[in-house]
Length: 358
Image (cartoon, rainbow, N blue to C red; front, side):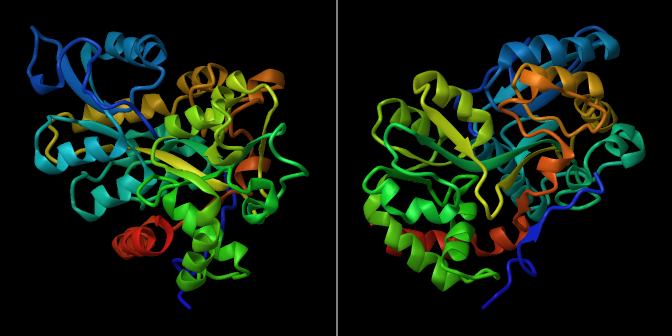
């Protein structure tokens, strides 16, 4: 039995998803333009997802552009394709947003530059779990979400309170789980180990338990949009999903519910890093500092775009709904060791294809 990076840890405080669309786009130009200048205006190329573009343009990019006399160009796509473009050297990205699962791959492959934390003072104001999720030399998490269970009350009999309930009669022939190659895939492997009765990660038990669930799976989803579509059409009763997407489920099925399993929801962290070779490192660090500011974090939380990591953000009432907010929530999240995940993902993918996705 091998421990999950010395065991799964429950995140303590000293303190979506993702998903995205496929084609490249930009706020004011094409990402292939690199860091050339227009007059005396600098250019900062930001690689990110395609959700909430209007919000980011008006509330995040525009104020930074004005303050720093810079043009922000965005390169849009999902985690995997954007990381591949950096691997291949086919983009001139300066700053990259990735889930921690993919960011760990970039770090291990030497694709990201180290950061100077003295240039990012707002790091001091965020939850400890977000400050250095992949090591002190690399970028922080600018948002933390949680993976829990969403389900249709009209299609499920009885309460759903545990990850083990996904293996129960409530979800016979109407369940979805994340595919192993998705951000939440390794979390499904770990939850299966737990449901099998292990306090430390047990790979064989995990895959045996996943194989048990396979007959009830309508489809293993690779993108959250697939979950939303199946849920909206009532092809599935539910499954594990990031909380930030629950509003989309509830818009389609008002009788929907999101729960944090008794064993703990999983922390889903989106990180921001500087790409190695960028000639805009200092400007990139200023941009990271801006992303962590109370102003951006509060606006993002109230718009239901991202959950805040800045502890100076104070929310109440409806503003707290649908996001991962507050020390009492964050301190209970379960975090996977992404270094351990990436060491094993090739083997797990092979086992998944042979033993689970039949």
